[in-house]
Amino acid sequence: MLVTLKQILQPAMEQGYAVPACNIDNEHNLRAAIEAAEEMHTGIILNTTPIANPDLVTFGKLAVDLARRARVNIALNLDHGKSFADCLLGIQAGYTSIMIDRSTLPFEENVKEVKEMVRICHALGISVEAELGHVGTGEQYDIDGHQAFTQVEEAKAFVEQTGVDALAVAIGTAHGVYKGKPEIHYDILHALHEALPIPLVLHGGSGTGDENLARCAREGIHKINLSNDLKRSAIQNLIKEDLSGNAVYQLYPLLAEGFKDKIKHYIRLFGCEGK
Ligand code: CO
Ligand code: CO
Image (cartoon, rainbow, N blue to C red; front, side, top):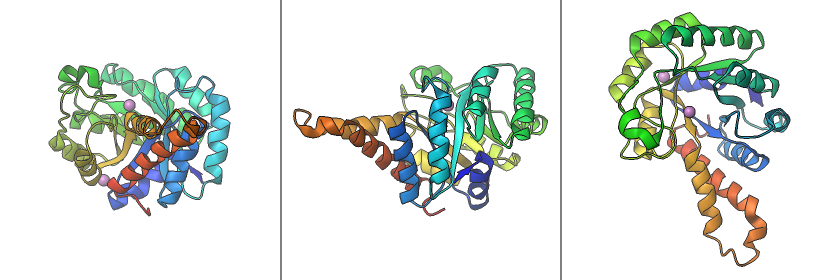
């Protein structure tokens, strides 16, 4: 069933677990992610960045159709809409949630642009996720990993002023592959979780480590974004095969199997199996 981000995160907030948000961009990983969720009897969030598929509107037709036919709840989220046009593309593609990323702008401008997107999306029955503080890249973790954390008072004002449905927070994770060891600031997470009435989102789940992610899922994060780890698992499942034989004809099924296995691992880890 196709649902909004708000609908899928409501029970996660009430019962205290996190839902994996898996980056998908083609028919194979889309189907693999839905199968993983169905086999684990849980809802799931599917993320697509505007640049991940060259024709998001066409891809969106397939994603919407498969999500509607799924036996579990599926929310389709446009990940990191960095411009007004990106966000509208997600709406046009049929996504039920838009993540508007204005985290590099000054606070007031971030508020202004997010508020505008909330007005548009809520009129259409679509959820909105925004980001406050800034989650940087793993390549620059020595710098990005230790600055631009989300401030509690600012976050409270941001949520009140924008009416946003979910908030991506900066507590020490980073996008892509970490250079160095990730350090999660649980004190900031606890303070944000205590202060904010909406679900918190963790970007840069890949490479953060099972122990950290399980703890985040228990202690206040309700959506965890995953991309690199899933792709890596897909590739590893392919290259373990003897590629001089018939395995080459199984290219896409092998990638999908590795992708799916890792999603199931995270569903168990985040406590949402059967939810
Ligand atoms: Co909570
Ligand atoms: Co992100």
